[in-house]
Picture 1 (cartoon, helix red, strand yellow):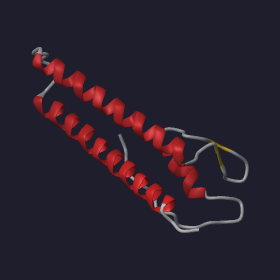
Picture 2 (picture 1 turned 180 degrees about the horizontal axis):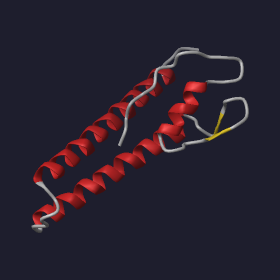
Picture 3 (picture 1 turned 90 degrees about the vertical axis):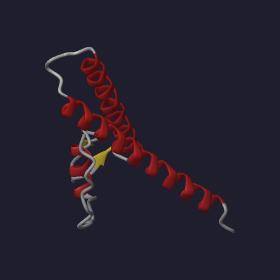
Picture 4 (picture 1 turned 60 degrees about the vertical axis):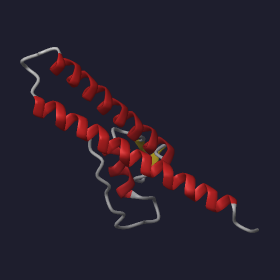
Length: 113
């Protein structure tokens, strides 16, 4: 699970090329269209992909925890604990993004027109 963000370095007239690279790192959230644009790779798709990655990490951590408790000699305590920490960090990151989105929504809805 890779949650690194790439900085936005430049914007040209045809689109955001760093966004295409970021979408590719998120597991192909969109397909690259001619001109460097990413088709269908909006914030919603990126967030959905990130949530799926967090869910997969949590499932893997649960699987490793169960295997370790059953006494599987191929699963170490260190591997299990690292997997659990990765899942926890991913969940906390997703929770912070959700809280920021809700705060932004509340701020926009409370704006005077």
